[in-house]
Image (cartoon, rainbow, N blue to C red; front, side):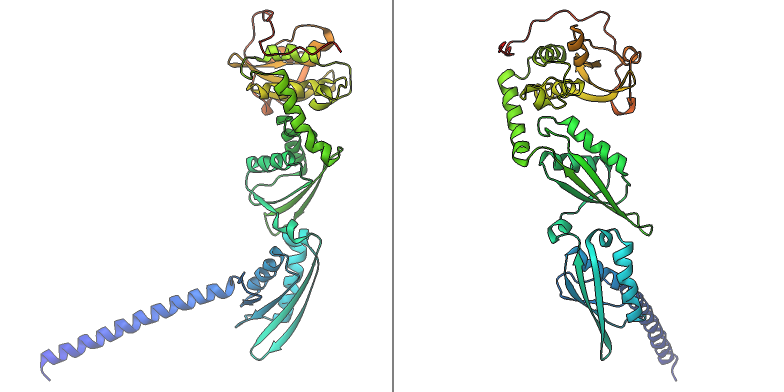
Length: 381
């Protein structure tokens, strides 16, 4: 046989071997993808029948039914790897007893299994603790900032519940209560009442995710609660015609002249419009209200004085932050004072990590100032 012909035949054989090897590689890669799909089969959201190939796919199918608050559904096994009847019982128990969504949403789950030729068909029936709207309203939060925003929006909308999924950060009941109080203290104009809250946390050792249900109970009727923000804004519009002509000291003097001390009123509305005598919390909330309305940075501080709970403010004045206790000035009949952290520590205690540092000190009491133009003194009546 000529050498040239032999070389051609050898080349063809080598090419055939290479192609056969490539085909083997592609088949392995395909089989790997197929195995991956069997282990993690995704359920079809737009279908009444969900097909699964593994236990994890079965769990996913049940979770999918719950997420849509479906009262019934069909799960069909395809080339299933495992004991279907044992696995569906185990999956129902896991989903309802060991997942946050199941613990929150499901009252009871039942199933039946039918063998149809080469596959099984599983009928699932579910009864729920919560409505479809409540399940759909579950929000997802990742950070403390996101949760604080969600709580603030819920209180400002005067809604009576908030349910959220904690994805990566754990928030305990104490922290959630603190955030709820902070939302109220930060926005007395939009949130006229601090509700009583109850916290239910649904968690499982097998997952970092948790569902938290926050129930809000308001003392005021819904209609009155809805009316108060507009009434407070009207009050501000009446007393402060020009928002940008004031500083914190002027506003503190006005607050001391408007409110009556030695009372039990705790909210800005009760002290300003309701006519009730104010305690230290009401003074601090009114200061927060009028400062924010006039564009002045202001915080309500929750702390202690003489071993008792006490509220006062930290305000921005001429570029620095100072403590200001308007209630103390009203009770003693003295000029409102701007004090540093060092000066306050002789009588007051507070969590310094929650508020701006007040490092500046005024060398002497501020000069007396006339009320700014636009501030209307209330009548003596």
